[in-house]
Image 1 (tube, rainbow, N blue to C red):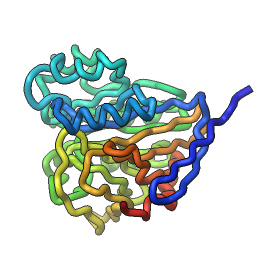
Image 2: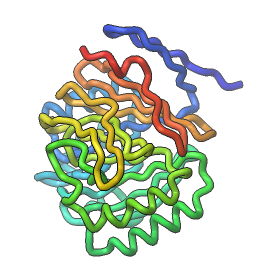
Image 3: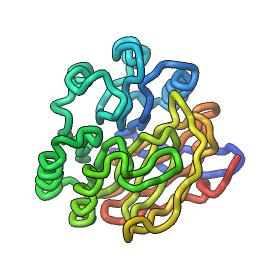
Image 4: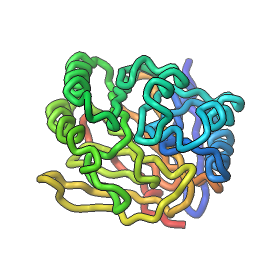
Length: 286
């Protein structure tokens, strides 16, 4: 018999959700490649929330060495389950070696969910990545598919512009549109912010407010014929995102969690091929 664990969160508002004990729980921490007080605060929050499996959407090393930075995590029983390369790295080969990645772009299935990982930093092999992405989405039979890479495909804040990696973005956009019915959400970083957005009707999880938090203004408006909408934007403090994936089906949940007090500031229900649905807690600001 399978049992569900009811979690009641009361911090300024009351919000309830059901998380099954069998669900896979992953912490999304982008732009985390430096160990400092902010990183430590995020790690402590993850520990208190019993999440030890990590998704790293890029910028995994700013200085020092991988062992110096990520040893703080591995020594505390964290695992690096899905890792994408960003523009801050110690070299593609070294990053692949340290995190034991199959390649600089690859696909992996965890919890009945396919994660397709791309290297948006490498604009020299874009045709190969586009062909790989097309093949993976064509063959995917899983009920949930997340695409993980570093640079957002449209501009989501004043911090960076999508044209930083224009060749990559122009290549993946039509593929996302063609296979929209198979995609659950994009997972990106780069902007050192935490937000939830839509590119058209495609959900976007951006979780990059870890070692450094930048001020920014969220973007909402039309870009190249696509409506870019920021649905939730963080309060300018360190954050991480918890991705909760049930044993089966086409649904998942993402919770944006403030590191200082473990407050679940916004919960979003995801269903493959559909827009994300925000819970009432997303409208509260404290």
